[in-house]
Amino acid sequence: MKNTETTASRSGSITSILSRTQGFMRRQLWIWPLLAAIILAFVAVWVRGRMESAIKAQISGNLKTILAANTEALRAWVATMKSQAELFAGDDRLRELTIELIHVSQQGGSTQAALLNAPQNNALRAHLKPVAEGRGFNGYVVLDTNFLVIASGREQIIGMRSPPGYAAELQQCLHGKSVVTHPFPSVALLPDAKGNLHAGVPTMFAATPIRAADGSVVAMLGLRIAPDKDFTRILATARSGETGETYAFDRKGLMLSESRFDDQLKRLSLIPVLGVLSCAYLMTELGITNWIRFLVWLAIGLFLYFTYGSRHSKLGRTNQQSYK
Image (tube, rainbow, N blue to C red):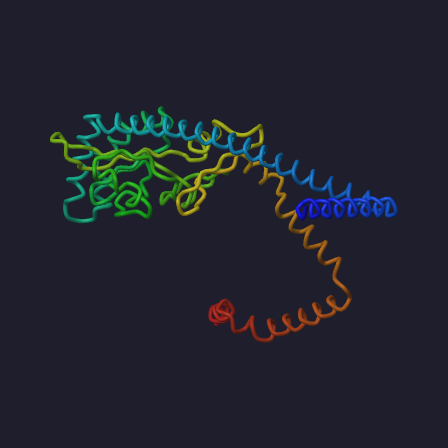
């Protein structure tokens, strides 16, 4: 009996609450739009979450496909570059001239002058350069096991010992391995995008050991590769759409490849123009007080410069001593 009475009382309470709620909802009609807005907001958030998840999954799948395609293209390209370098290094004439140049470098006197004047260097250039350029390489370098440059298509680095970047990139060749180096700044004078010669232009090599008749490593051959023409082009094998780009970074976060739109951006010069426009916009938003402060501090700075700075600077002292 008690259970029946308890159940009946609970049912009566629920019925009373529902009737009161129904009456309240009938009197307060403004609640209906609010409830509808809340329901629509929850539905919108749920739909947005599902759409974002689907889009992220699709983008992730596309990126993985592009990564796999570019990875395979790079592996095939690297294997081709290594095989071509090994083919060059296995040439008997190249091996013979290289060993003779090593003997020249070990003689007394000026190593650089001896290597530059050695007839073997001219013979090696005549033998190697046309064939290398015919395979798409734009230069070569030969180093002994102490990283002394004994031959090169660029005479200014012949005789240099351990040029910056070479030792770190070609170290594996001493252990009998062929490598394709990362792009690194060149030591030799190379033409940039405008055709001007200067050092520091990005370069990379397909390098392989040169072996003696007994199989020991006596030197290293590096065939120069232009990163902007070959390495970056390989990364464009697979991309997203017409304007999508793929960039390569090393483990330190250094960007190794270039953009396909470098020339267009340089011609348009959008970055300087946008910088000037943004600064001009910010200047127009300054109040009169800020302009007065700016002009006052500018006048103080110009006064200090012309009364003290220009006379006591290193350049000013040099000019005064030259006049004397």
